[in-house]
Image (cartoon, rainbow, N blue to C red; front, top):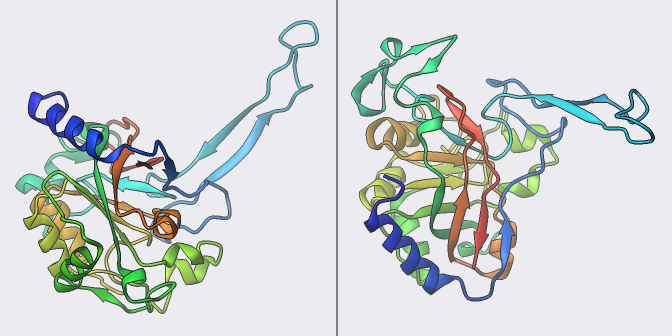
Length: 274
């Protein structure tokens, strides 16, 4: 549970070790109507619904307001455990159709059950390790590669960590088709590498790509390994360029999913504190 003494003790220990400079680094993309999105999800839409001058609150005071619509997997976001099934089975061995409905979403594993994340964060900067601005389109990040990068950076992946994997792909954010990777593909994590992370007991992991898995990968092996088999939430569309530029590989990671009851995902605004 969120407030167990063991968890609190772990957070405090990591915070005392890592929070030295008092710096905060944003790890999310701003949300705009022209940002890339998966063709499997609806886009982000925004407009001002009331302008100043449309109405008055009294005297010379007025208010402006807006509305937006979006899929829960737009922009920088975290996947809920109901997002991926294999053979109709979701996390915990639950039968997806028995615990979900279009109206109410998922019982038991909706995104509202994901606690606020305040964890030790580790950046595995794969692109930097290879001396590249960004990885090749079809670069498949394997388990041995993650282990090698961690050793080269002098960091250890430990239970409860948030492990962020940089491909450099965020640099293509303004080029919708290149970033999303249709039809050519995009770099990402293999099922083997996902198992390596799971074996180390990570709490969550994410990349600066929109699919986490290396693409094309119709069977989504990393998603299945992490979420279906191990109940580990995945984050996508992270911004890791500034952490890489500063050479920060260990930090406190903070992200709060929205409490969308029954949801399969949620936008987040993650930050790194170091």
